[in-house]
Image 1 (spheres, rainbow, N blue to C red):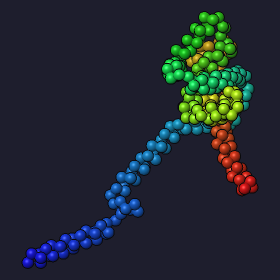
Image 2 (image 1 turned 135 degrees about the vertical axis):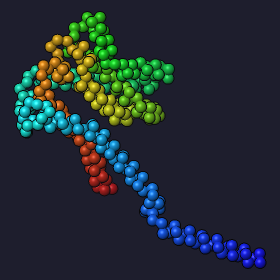
Image 3 (image 1 turned 180 degrees about the vertical axis):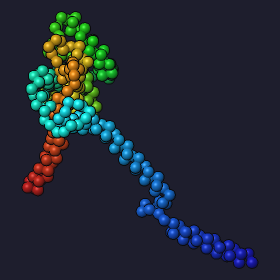
Length: 307
C-alpha cells in the first residue's frame, strides 16, 4: 500500500508540473522571454529618456535657432518676425564701430590663444616631470583663476597694471586674456600627460634624439588632441569675455561684448554678427570631423595597393 500511495503522489506531482509548464508556455511573453507586464515599464522609461533628451537639445539649440532666424527679419522688432530680409547683414558691414570691435576681438583672441597654448603646454610638460609636492602646489595655484569670479581676476589685473604703470589699452587687454587662458590650457593638457608612457621619451633619448626633438617628435604628437582642446577652450574664453576686458581695455578699445553692452538701443545687426560666428564655428567643426574620416578612407584605399 505504501508503494501504491507513493506512486500516486508521484503521479499527481508530475501532472501538476506538466500543467504548470503548459501554463507557462501559454503565457504571452516578448522576444526577450520576459513577461508582458514588464514591457509597459520599459516603454515608459524609453519615452521619458527620449523626451528628456529632446528637452535638453531644445534648451541648448532653440535660442541659437531663434537668433539666426531673427537675423533675417525685415522689421526692427526682436520678438515679431515680419519677413525675410538681408538688411541687418548690410547694416553690419556698414557699421564701422562694430567691425572694429570684431577686429579687436579676433586679434586679441588669436594672440592670447597662441601664447597661452604654448606657455600652458610647456608648463604642463614641466609639471608632469616635477616632484609630486611641487606639482600639487602649482596645480592648486593654477585652479585659483579658474575658480575665482571674473570680477576678482579683472580688478586684480587692473591694479597690477596700474602698479607697474602700464597704460590700459591693447597691450593690457592681450596680457589679461593670456593670464586667464593659461590655466585652462594646463587643465586640458595635464590629464593626457598622465596617460603617457615615460619610457617612450627615454627610449628616444637613448637612441640619440636631443631633448628638443624628443619633445617635438615624441611627446607633442601624443598630446596633440589635448593641446587642440586647450587652444579651442582658450579661444572661446577670450572671444566671449566681458568683465576682464571691461576693466583692462582702456578708452577707445572695444571688444564685441563691450560694444553690445554699450549700445543705447539693441538692433538686429548683432543677430547677424552672431549668425556669422555660428556659421564659421559650424564649418570648423564640420571640417574637424570630416578630415580624419577622409584620411582614414584614403589610407584604407592605399592599403590594398601597397599589399
